[in-house]
Length: 174
Ligand SMILES: [Zn+2]
Ligand SMILES: [Zn+2]
Image 1 (cartoon, protein in one colour):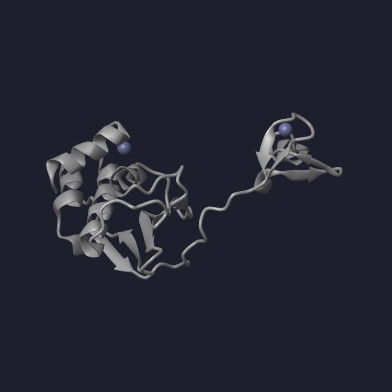
Image 2 (cartoon, protein in one colour):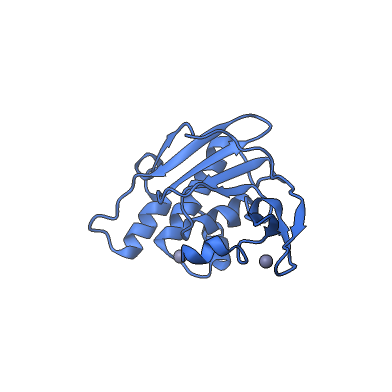
């Protein structure tokens, strides 16, 4: 692991931690295996199964970002990332198999970054297909608060289009 790659990810994330190391190793492993650098536009897509520190390693190194729509979530609570390349159709899922065991936090972090790749991740076929390109939704004005809201988040309440915060069903469920 080149020091400057790790430092770039740490600068983006805000601190060094084993969680970040998981995402950084997944990103660099993908770069080695697929001979890619950063994702151009939406060509390279990552679906993360967690919203923990590792996702920032993916964002910092692969250019899959939340805002561009090529970083998506399918939360299962697992340390797993699926990668897709639109033009080639290549796809893989990396699942963390490394365990901390008796290692200290620092030792575990180093192991995640520098241990044999086959001990860190299992690599397999993704469990779900490549998602369509980031959709662009129409927006509607919430008929209660008046704020513009993208279509998937509009609810119907007594025939009125309302946002999630104004939808009364939500408060009943806490
Ligand atoms: Zn962290
Ligand atoms: Zn509203």
